Structure formats: structure tokens, C-alpha cells
Image (cartoon, rainbow, N blue to C red; front, side):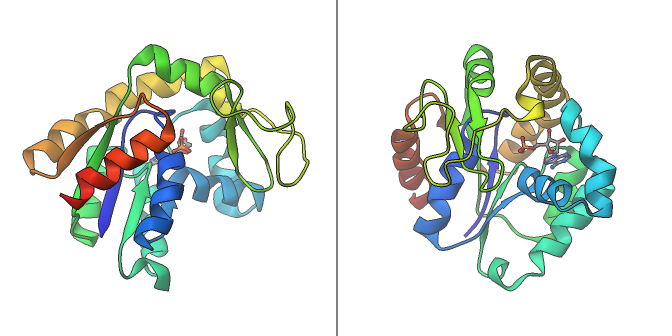
Length: 209
Ligand code: AMP
């Protein structure tokens, strides 16, 4: 099953994808996670994109497309995948259509107010990438990761200025993909406002149709 998760930042794509990958037995390929792991590993690519991510801007298409191409070569991606955060531009979507045929594009629908609430309350464990929310999905002990006991951090790009920038980047560059995929008959809308278990159940139902 070749799936794309589309939708604004903070809509819960990553949370749902990490459940769905086990259910479908396919990898969760998040371009944001791939970039963050390059940054953490201080690779050349990581050094190149660090400032771009912190500001909430988009990494140039050529770099992003090449990274995804390489990821698709890995053995776990041969029988399906969930792409999360890619494509984000029409140029990326065109490039993807030459690499893989898609089964569905799941559009996570969430209004602006809720997006801002979710992003500003998001906290992350730096070493494992596990995410929490201060209200909707708090850790057992405030500010501490349940598994490692490490202090949770706020992503640079979840800080107020970057959030607003990411939203306008989303609206300008990524939202046009909704019409792009609707025209191709691939788009399915999913209400991203309920709790993750409900969104996940709706996803399974929708995709299995
Ligand atoms: P995410 O974790 O999906 O919110 O992505 C975090 C950041 O990584 C984005 O704000 C961009 O700076 C960068 N990024 C992730 N995916 C892409 C993409 N498909 N195209 C360009 N930049 C991306």
C-alpha cells in the first residue's frame, strides 16, 4: 500500500503514521524526521538545512526529492510506505508520480486555531523523537519523557514565529496539492480533530474501502 499523508503541520500525521505503519506493516517515511536526523548527525545535508528547518521554511525541492529517492531504494520501502510531509510542493508531487504509483492520499483536515493550539503545546524527546502534547497527550511526569526520563524540549519550529511561517508556507505551497490529488481521484479527506484513536479508526475504514 503506497500512501501519502497530506495536511497542515500539527494535524497529527506523524502520530497516526506511527500507528498505521505497524497495522499495515509498511515504513513511515517522514521527510521532517529524515532532515532532523541529518541535523542531529551533523551531516553535510544536516548543516545545509538546519537554519531552514528552524525558520519553518521549505528545503529546496531538488534536495528533498533526492533524499526521498534514496530512501525509496532501501529494502523496507519495496512493498509500500506511508509518506508523511512529502510531497509539499507541486514539483515534489510531479517527481513522486515518476517514482511511485499511489493508492491514496489522505488529507488530514484541521482548522487554523486547532493547528496553532496543537503545535504550540507539542513537546518532544530529543533522543527518541517521541512526541507529547502538554494538554492532549501529556507525559506521566510533566516535562519528562516516559521512557528515557530525559527532559522534553520544544522544537525550534514549534515556537510562535516559526508556527505562523509554517502555516503560511503550508497555505501557499502545499494546500494546492489538495486540488492536484483530488483531480487525480486519489484524495480522501479525514477529520483530524478527534482524539488519535478515533482518527486512526477512521483512517483504517477509509483506506480499506
Ligand atoms: P515536519 O516534521 O514534516 O513538520 O517537517 C519539518 C521541516 O522539515 C519543515 O518545516 C521543512 O523545513 C522541512 N521539510 C520536511 N518535509 C519537507 C518537504 N517535503 N519539502 C521541503 N521541506 C521539508
